[in-house]
Image 1 (cartoon, rainbow, N blue to C red):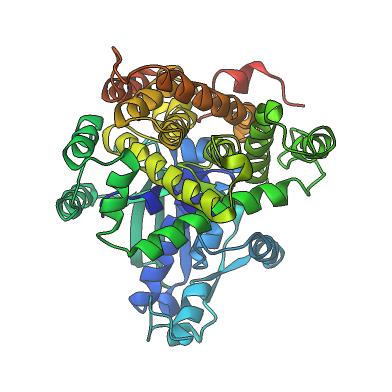
Image 2: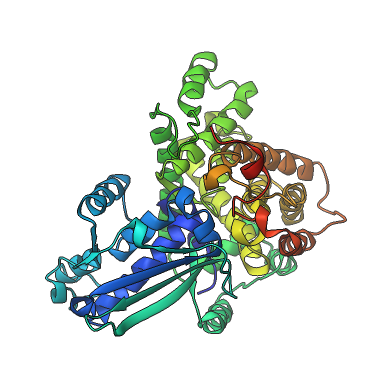
Length: 488
């Protein structure tokens, strides 16, 4: 299917869209296929191999535990943090996972996904002796399609292969099955042909705006209407906004240090209390402190493995919520706006951000393992800048200019997480990029939309920069801060 706003903004768990959400989604697909093909009862043993960046930083990103949960049939969009904790504790205690259990339960309950197949395992899944330590780690093996790869194989009692598959986690929680890349591309082209206003480049997008007399966000809305009603689009986007806000609320209630061994203290709770004391009436002079707080809170929750929105990735999940906070509170008229008016702004903001996100997915990458953090934080900052410019009354050309400015000044940004964790430098980087996005929007609005570097130019430059970037700066924890800062 053509990339849409609900593909770029999905609910999942932290800490990484490409290293946690993607592998869980791939494992869940594999588990569902086992149930659908009535193979669950015959399954006797399991093998999972992680390749490249998934293996190099898998421990810090929770890749292995995400795979185990996916193999039980859990989906990243639906699983709750309490379920994550309880199932992982059970697997660690018993030394076995319940292969396909969630899928089998759906089948017994009449779930539409695998209706009629759940009875094979009595709705209980198939117990398989398997845990984190059984996963094969192959960090030095890079498969041709992408550095983030995971393969699965289930065999019977005689060692005969029942089912196997390899998936690539290509960023933002998107997964592609090995051998189906061409088919996926053909399906994408076919689905875009069904859209009323298909686009791949900023030139295409701006031409639609000119021809139709509509905004960049309205182009995205027109395409979303091909699959959903206006009510479904609005409610879906407001749900995304609500999950973002709930993420902040959860984060500011936590008081312990972040998991993973670095002993990074949470700042969001203390900052929140200080802001409540120093800014009880919402003084605009504190806008940047609130923006920083939202970005930090979201990414601290993400680092905790909490429930977040990929926007468009988990590593950059705090930027769009932070700039959206600014848009719904500090732009013209928002100080006295009703909730419905703030809802309207949120919907418009996410549609505009989504349209710019499509350009990055189509022409470059949002995967830190593929192009470095410029593809994650840079893309999110660009999306947020363009969306804010639209909310503040910018023309389509000014919106594109804002998005270009934000990315231009994130070019070359490396992905060098210490210990492979999304804590340093990732959390602060989200706050800095949020302020960059707001500044980029304001700079664009002081211009007329014309600029020497086009949005397409900077997207292609980001892609080419990522190709040239040393692999040690692309989410492998083998360069930069990851090796120059001693773990605490």
